[in-house]
Amino acid sequence: MAFSIYYLQNHFSATFIIATITIVQMFVAGTRVGHILIVGVLGIIGILGYSKIQELRNLTETTDGFRKGRIEVWLNPESDPKGKGWQILQSLYTIASGGLFGVGLGDSKQKYLYLPEPHNDFIFAVLAEELGFFGCAFVIILFGIFIWRGIVIAMRAPDTFSSLIAIGIVTMIGLQAIINIAVVTNTMPVTGMPLPFFSYGGTAIIVDLVSVGLLLNISRHCNQK
Image (cartoon, rainbow, N blue to C red; front, top):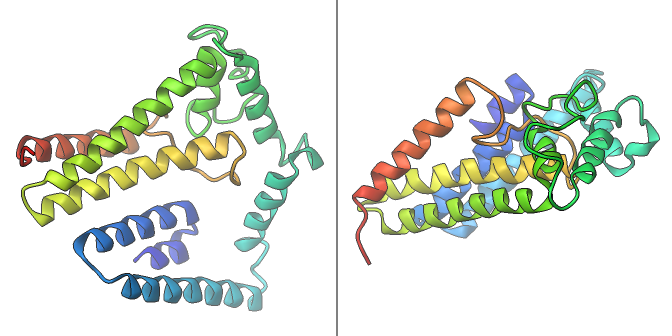
């Protein structure tokens, strides 16, 4: 399924999250590691084969070409400061502007025409500017607590089905947060991934809230240990 979405929508980050959720749930359900590795190898072969087909069709520029460009900019954003490197350079400048304590909630200047997508994919950079290092650390700690408690709920779930749902929700939200923060800080190449509960959005925030509701419902029936 994940590879099909990658093929039809060309959305690698979403495909990665779906594949990771599947692998984690398979592991929690008791699937042998060897079987998971076989599936992973087949998936990699499929992606490489798809890339080769695109190359043969001379479609590299519209598909894998832009990913190659993103990786090049990630490694050296200064090579094109007014073009492809603009977004990540402005993101880093926005983060640096916050210092330790930030400029104050709502007082960001970079979000006005300088930083692209300040309300969505790069909201964490604005958060860093307004609340500073300690504000960012607090948000990261909150996500860490969410992941930890989600794992505890999954371990104490009353049945396997509930456990798999809980671990899937934790993996989905946790991965989104990790990828978003990594992109904003230029730890990984730029990809479209919102920050759960912070980024502006319609269906994304609805899915996050419904997922948390499911997680809380599972926690109500957890085995107390």
